[in-house]
Structures are given as C-alpha cells and as structure tokens.
Image 1 (cartoon, each protein chain N blue to C red):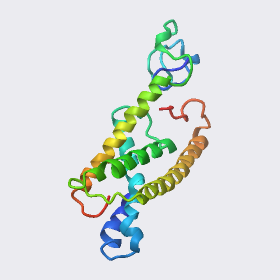
Image 2 (cartoon, each protein chain N blue to C red):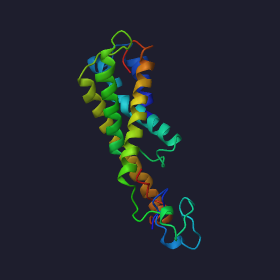
Image 3 (cartoon, rainbow over the protein chains, first blue to last red):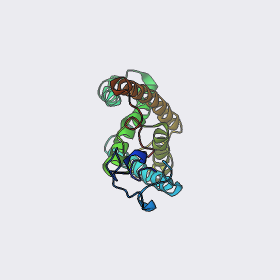
Image 4 (cartoon, chains in turn cyan, blue):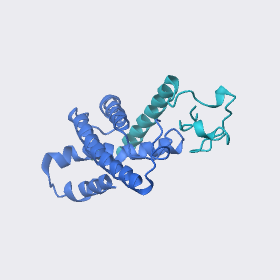
Length: 74
Length: 134
C-alpha cells in the first residue's frame, strides 16, 4: 500500500489513516484511496512529461521574447 | 547563481572588451542557457504543483530543457527572422548540451553533498530522504 500523493509506504500507517510523510488521507478499505505499487501509472507519467514539456517550451519562448530587446544572443 | 554571474561577466565585461574571442561572442551565452533557465523552469513547475520536490534538476529534466530550447531557437524562431533575433547556428545546440552536462555534473555533486549530510544527520533514509518520482 502506497500514498497516492507522494508514493510513500503506508503499511505502518493504517491506524492513523494518513500518510506519515505528506499527511494525505486514505482508507485501507477503499482501494481507490491508495496505490498498490509505489510508482505512478503510465498515464500519469505521460501527462507529467507532456505538461512539463509544454512549460519548458513556454519558458524558451519567454527567453526568445526577452531576447527581442537585446541585440546580442541570449 | 554561478551561471547568472558568468552571464553578467560576459555581457558587461568580456563582450564589450572583446575578451575571449569567438567563444565568448558566439557561444558562452548558449553554454549558460540551460544552467540559467532550467532551474527557473523547474521552479515554475514546482509553483504550479507539477514538480513535488525542490531538489536539484535531474538528467532527464536537463535533457528536456535542451530539447525545448533546441526546438524553439533552432526550429521555430528562425522561421520568423523579422520578429525574433537569432542566428540559427546548429553549433548552438552543442553549446546548450555542453552547458547542460556541466550543470548536471555540478548539481549531481551538490546533491550528493546534501544526501551525505542528511545521512550523517539522522541516519534514517527509509522515508524522508527519497524524492518522489515525479
């Protein structure tokens, strides 16, 4: 059993029903509130890579816009 | 901060006084590109809640920054010469990558120092010392 938010192990925290690391709540009786393996799903990884790539490209465009006002490279 | 210092040195001292020749004129800013902007981009990702830790950049994050800057500065921007100022020099990509590798080495060593101090500090790496995957 692993935390949905930070992927920490929840084995010793079933009595407090909260992740000992990030305090994210979970219910041992409800499989939707925790992860079976301590690793994000493939869809979550893909979404994360896409979102961070969009932000990185946006950052590069901001640098390019900033560069418009400077004659010598970035 | 080191990259920012180098950028200021290049912009206000080296370039105006023609010190360093073609490298400082053509490529030093490109070498400084990833060390300077990857932490800023990762900070934005941290602010919007995508990056859950504030640790040193990982190799794949630096590679992602390299891909983004290469795409924008070598493929997109050169198509709009009237709007943006760029030379579209393919060697810029090598300069970005060189700067990224140097920065990765720097951050890797700095991260090792932090992990070592944490290890010495509490001796407990079971829960707290690990960074989340994403």
